[in-house]
Length: 305
Image (tube, rainbow, N blue to C red; front, side, top):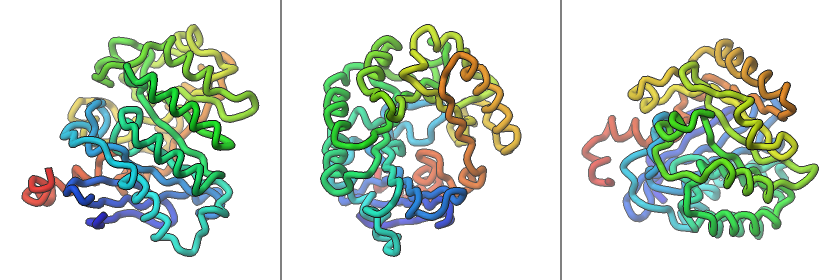
């Protein structure tokens, strides 16, 4: 790995851009929550699993220009680089070390992600892997392997990206073959451990995207599933596709809280994740740093493509 660029604040989030040995670019994130303390209290590392992404979600800057899967060692090197950048913190003593497979790429399309999760279990058994997925169709064997690997951790977080309750709108937002809701419900039920973290259904809220709580309740049991709500963060791709993004913190919080109430009355545990709006300026949304670099250095980016 050769570092190209990094941007951000160490007390909030730092985004790294690196070139792998095959000449392709990848980005990953080192972040903490200043409201709960430093990285010894809660440390979140967000890694990429693919070069670009074949899914092409209408709000994600990582889509397009797909160049294949990262190897096991290439994913691990992102985690190790973040550790190297923070020598004052022992990751084995961190109270909550969270490794999210949620940056560039759809993790369920890369078999090497399972190998990395087993590496985490061997090296950092108290870590919490987090899989954010749109549940691609035809990857049942991958989810079986994930279920087996999850038994090696005190907790593993599984997040299904739904983003809307309108099937036609969902196909537009996520133009890739997807599992049906009943299939996702079955997976979530099998992952669920009583008393542990529930699988979550994620919605990136936008005024123009329908999210009807009652429709979800007909498929997903609130005893099994939680709901995670975020505002749709401003990205280049979302703007190009005329999706409404929320840049003001108070407006974003209001949007999320109002929708959270609709789910709460139906018995769902709701996670409201608004975050710090400064992260948008840092470029902490998926694919933003690669896209900025290509715009700034088109000749170099073309050579890496």
